[in-house]
Amino acid sequence: MELLAVVFPHLAAVRIERVYQVGAIVRVKAATTEPKSLCPGCGCESVRVHSRYERCLADLPVAGQEVLLQVRVRRFFCDNPGCGRKTFAEQVPGLTSRHGRRAAGLLSMLRTVALALGGRPGARHTARLACAVGRSTLLRLLRNVPDPKVATPRVLGVDEFAWRKGHTYGTVLVDVEGGHVVEVLPDRSADSFAAWLQAHPGVEVICRDRAGCYAEGAQRGAPLAVQVADRWHLLHNLSGAVQRAVSRNRAHLREPAKPETTEPPAEGLESDHEEGAAAARTRARHAEIHQLRSQGMTITAISRELRLSRKTVRRYATAASADELIIDERAPRQTILDAYLPYLLERWEQGCRSTDQLLAELRDRGFLGSARTLRRLTAKLRTATVTPARPPAPKIREVTGWIVQSPGKVAAEDLATLDQIAARCPELASVTELTRQFAEMLVHRRGEQDLDDWAARAEASPARELRDFAAGLRRDWAAVKAGLTLPYSSGAVEGNVNRIKMIKRIMYGRANADLLRIRVLHRY
Image (cartoon, rainbow, N blue to C red; front, side, top):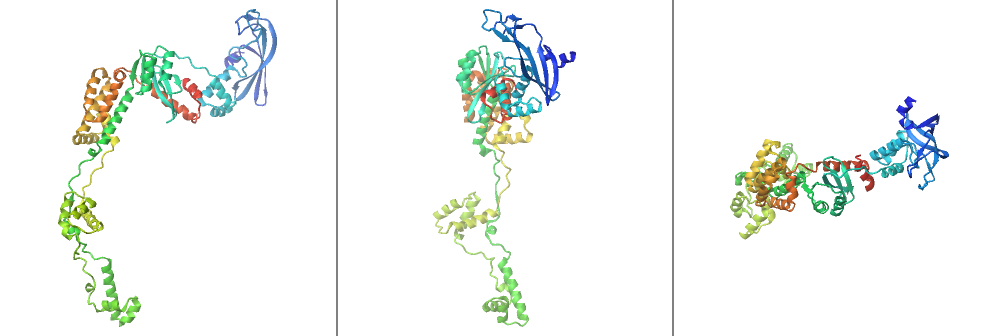
């Protein structure tokens, strides 16, 4: 009996009469022993037994085997004349429940499996635990789980999460000090947030992002609460403004081009001195024909042998050397561009590389040739022009990171590159200085002392992106100043949003809103 009380404490209130096995199921016959019972309607004790009957309950598995309890219980008379019940069935604490077909321990375990795994995965898991139930049963048990009792938090965090990304969003409310979820609202609106705050008075601080709906809902639902803009969102908004400013000034990111060096134009426009393939063929054919002539072959025989015309063979045979047959390609040919060549070379050295622009200028000077003729010349000029290799320009996101990050976290060569960019672009130099000042104020939470001066300098900045950012801060000034001064942030909220994403992936994205809410509230 001591072993029974230790291993099976939920059976301590009943008398075990028989234990036997039928197939893969262990059956336990038991009976209640208490002489009296309490009426569930009025709470009065009763000792008068009306009748007895047997209840079958599925219990926790033992040694990998299913267990079925067959408990003989009694029905009592209620002797309280003011009670509406005439009879009632007794319940065994920690074992039975009204109309329940599972023991309390098994019911608790199945609810835990449903909370952790959901429907189909949970059903597969229970089959391995020797207490197999269907997915619908698990979901029904999950929907019957009562909401945890949570006190109204003093510091409340609010943020959105996606039911379906890009389409519908909900709201998660988090106790920032405790780190747990307080409630999950089905939509993202000021009305629902304000209604929840009005139904749960006592919130003193509200941590939120820059969304206008939450600011409006907090003002309507808890007008006395201090609203705190999250510091990460403030820095994220500033990073977006910096990136837009860098993108607008991306022409200054690349180092200025060094002067190009051009080879002497006259040499660049002359033809190559090396003989081409035609000259090589002419020399080979001249040597072959003279060899055949030295062997005594006639002009006609050579013509048939090489499949050439007799005139061609005679011309090769009468030439003393191949040079007489090769046209002198080294002599420059006269072209229609010769009269305009000095002007073209002058404009090319001045940096004009557009063929269309050069053609338009030559037309004004009387050039009647085609664009194709000029394009052949500019192609030769580009080949003759030597352009010094320029290092690639840093990417916009890289420069943004150098500006936003702390200088101690940026490599020395990257800082040097950023200094060169700032020297070439005074606007980006101002952006860098103001961004670092804001980041330092954010890290050390000096908003109460420095935010007004910083906003004034940002509004006078040459970068319109920083001016727009400062204007946005003015519209939410109290929350921004509190965010840069108070120690509260939305870190706990963002962590719970990530946990909601994980739960959605576990549920394959098919969870209904009520099931997801239950799992989030119960911290699974």
